[in-house]
Length: 359
Ligand code: IPM
Ligand code: MN
View (cartoon, rainbow, N blue to C red):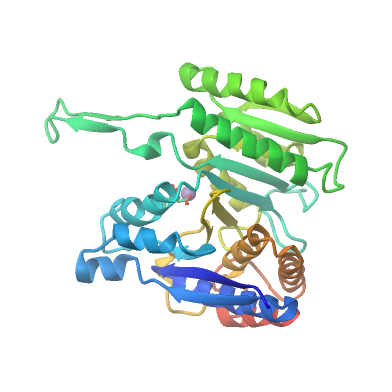
């Protein structure tokens, strides 16, 4: 009997629904070609629903989502809702409740895509960031005192437990072993770089560094490196070719992957996955809701389609994932004028159609 995956769709806000529609189109094409089934169930969480009903994400919804093979999400955020409410109440709540403790973000420049960095090409801009996704200043430990007064104080702490650090690093070493540059035939060695700020955040990165060395000793085939995060932003621009796999904390990972996205041609191309290796993972393009382009059939769906590709990989549909990857590269190289919204030389739906046909 043919295998069928049930996928929860959370198209969300802004251009989310438009890019998810194209992603589904491509996933359907891959499913037909490689003989598996996809059963999509749509959830309308997001800004519109919140404004109508006041509901963000009920516990019962989280329970229901646990029953799916994966979640495919567009974007969360609404111009009419105060920043933080939807992000914390939906996106971060999902990541935390489903314990998606890894945020996997490949930084890849496709052939034919313009990068703002002079003299760099697909050979140099080709690395992956493993962003810890469950701790740090994202956990909401903190508060304020005397708000609105001149003596107001605000504290928001970065929190990490050894268990959180260990499981993230273990994932990172395993990932490097299977997806590092040597493993992919692109280099002489598999390298995992820990990115931190051990010269200032001494408590946090003492913990991370010790765990990195201890767990790393179990992976003698992997070269270990350490860089401060400020230096990394410089290297991402000046010599990105030095990176293979990067592992870092939640907030640093958030920041360096936006810079990475810029180097790979913009948020229209940058894909990601929130992974729980033992549970339900959620795949989303890392760009936001792009309110300027909503409803104009002008947004770039490549990042969402690439996230769908990561989902196929995680589901174990390796051949289908490779076919989608090839199709993306082909259409990007031969058909798209730019990766920027409204400058692609094609509409959103045309890009989706072209990639689906190519699969
Ligand atoms: C991301 C986003 C989110 C984050 C926001 C929307 C909460 O920037 O996925 O990178 O900070 O993780
Ligand atoms: Mn971000």
